[in-house]
Image (cartoon, rainbow, N blue to C red; front, side, top):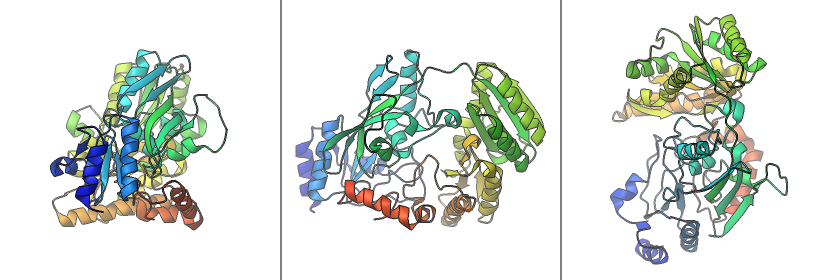
Length: 456
């Protein structure tokens, strides 16, 4: 296919200002926050403002056999939005309208470019709440959350994005537009196509509108902090807590992460501890948090404190949300995303530290202890080829460590390009074949985000 001829057709099809050909601008949109994934040379960047423009773009690309890489805010860390040679980048950030907040039916209808925090704020204005809350909520978009089935700090009790997506408008690989799902709380008519698209990373269709479930806000939360001298003690506390109750939040930060946050923000965190656990309870009584405190002390916590002050609780959560940027101040940071069985959280943190140490790189581990989802983050020097090589090896070593413990290679960030080498081990031949069949049925020419998740 001739690039210039294709570009002419694309420009003639779409409104003025929708297609960008400046190579410097295109380059800025050709990557996400991942490392070890070099972008190619895309042919064009398209920034639509509505569904019909998305559909028109896909139809032109399908007619000419040009691949499409969908992207939103570009905050992904698995390479899911990294563009390849000769593709069109389709960026949906201009599709950022909150179409409706339906207070009677407890739902919202939004376009994919709406930021998570914007939706949360809009829901709050109506006395409602959207629970999925990634640490990057201020900068990540709902479309990206849907693409990767994003979770967040409160997902241990309230679930991840898939539990809140009621329906989707999707542009398929031939440019046709379909609606899947419903507006009702329950519904089992036909296959659950909505759930299929959630987490598919733009490989099956391009989401252009999302219908989301909202909830009444929970009671004010009470917050607990507990410090431990060893990871096994923190692990025993996590196992005891999750076996007896479901807090609204249960997070862990290792010593490296705590030290990075404290060095940056001076929040009076104990930098001599091996691990910090944060827990919250929003059930309206103090009994649950008292039981969590007792479990932490029984497991060997050196310090346990509770607070019902919302500001103090929010400050502690801020420390957790700052984990990644604090580590990123130390060098080039690449965040992993693995999930292990609840009883293996401490073993996973230990195994990750041991395996990355072999490669001579620094790692800080934090994450959602309540559901076993950890975010070990490697810090290396991108300008040093040897450091980058060791960092990449350590990244894959920690991913394999999760599989060795009976876990999964990704809990909420997606497979993208980075995790693709590990997918076959996790899924197995039979399940991988089913994935290929679904992809072939919905995208027979393979133009939607090619090479992501698996290479077909």
